[in-house]
Image (cartoon, rainbow, N blue to C red):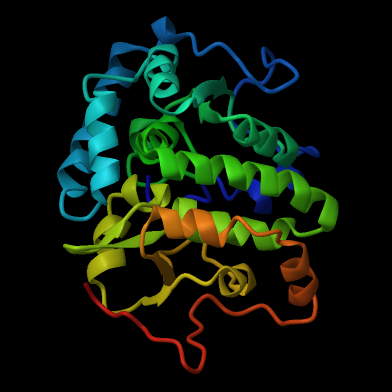
Length: 292
């Protein structure tokens, strides 16, 4: 996946699509929770070969660029040989952190998505991109969802954070804070960076499933790299059709969990009185952490 994909920040698009615009994926067999059977046996040899090509490319790129927790999770999932069977992977995941994978036809409504996360269920799209979409795809496919997201669900602290995010999403729907919360998802779960003893590393799925941004986010002199502040993140617009202009950096996953544990209700109220910030903003007093 290239970061030009609008990925799971479907908060910006799914409402429109769910009211008439065409969604990619077969929704005819989905249940009330938008869950489908993966039908793993239906994938063709050509699709498994395409998965292997995608996996091989990313597996070569992530060492030295991804955080150790991601690398360790990817190793345990052992999905290099072909499109993974989600039920088998889910059993491994449940044993480690209590999470499960649910197969979905594609993008799902916000309420459905948050409900799944709040109950430690991660939705994984069942279809795979075409060979022509090897470097660019408009909606998240199974490669992005599985390769980018699932490895870190084996980490207990990150797994707890994602559940907490789902619960916050359900509340945000009631408080009118969805747009602000979507930015937190984008800048952490999709495009987050983390400090390590070896230097900055990526943990965001949008980065780690991208053929280009995994290098750009760490080594380009163009983007800003700023220490995570939740309220600042929630004010900041993001790019869905180019590499990011700003990345937010956490110290560790425990910091991410603790900084997002408080009730966001007063933050949403304050943000209604403040202007949004362009994606390339550097505020007075902020330190640009620069190139790794």
